[in-house]
Length: 400
Image 1 (cartoon, helix red, strand yellow):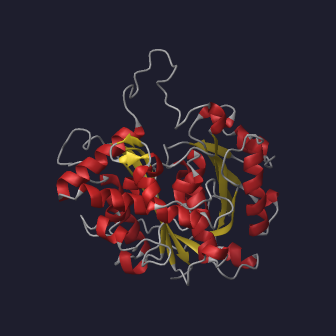
Image 2 (cartoon, one colour; image 1 turned 135 degrees about the vertical axis):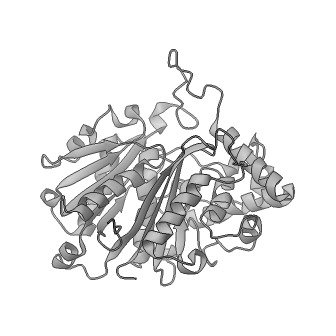
């Protein structure tokens, strides 16, 4: 009978490139930047890695399909390398594959690395398949801001939320994340903003304004995982272990209007419940020390707090305005600046989130270090409110 992966796998090392407009870099440069930090942190040689997983969402950003960009870019020692893509959850999916390989006994040491080189592709947002592709009617009239604006409308309609309060809460999300990103030298955007700036910014899709949207960036992040026994044999004493990794994919019910009211993300709730059960979390708001969630838009972060059961249904606006998710709040969110300040190089985002949780749990986050964290949660959302894939990962102090 399945028993889960709790405490069976630990993170041996992690690394992250600087995110931003990296015009001077090839994908291999970004990979190497993250990997060199990770390998040094792990304290191993490259030839000790037995398998690797590469996450990229867009073929063109990795200079072609397949796994050879990672294998050749890092000159890996003729080991199995697999490319994974699962919408915006691609980075966590690579981490899940590496973790499962170690937990199963298929290998002792595995690498997960995600990257994306988006700025060179020339779009103001994420590239759309239907732009310039002949006979492709894949979401031809759909935009991400438009779809998530509908999430805000659904939320407002369900709970009767005052429009001014909703916009102020969304503005607070962005202001909070920028304040955190200001302390992170690897973030793309490193400047403070005010609530007034957010509220007066150009409107993109009502009620989502310019400062409610995450940016477009280049970046890479990675992690090396192993068993607790191997980690201890290598001299590691402060072990950070994987508690849960859960993935949930829409089956079409939301899009078919079967009881879904458009006010929340159904898959997040399902994945969160599974992750908490696997990790032994019974009271998320009291037990989760910090989160990194998929703040593609400020409304997404606020709704996600409810979907992760960190806020009561309809309570996200009040909790956000009360500072519950600020750096000095009860459950800090986006302590590194989030997608809002890092941007969203798709294949890298999930691993970038795990990188920050790993630093925090090791007490190595510098000026943004939180006091005595025990459990860190990451959340990726790929797709749209009615049709998506969601991953939830929980890591923490080994044995906690």
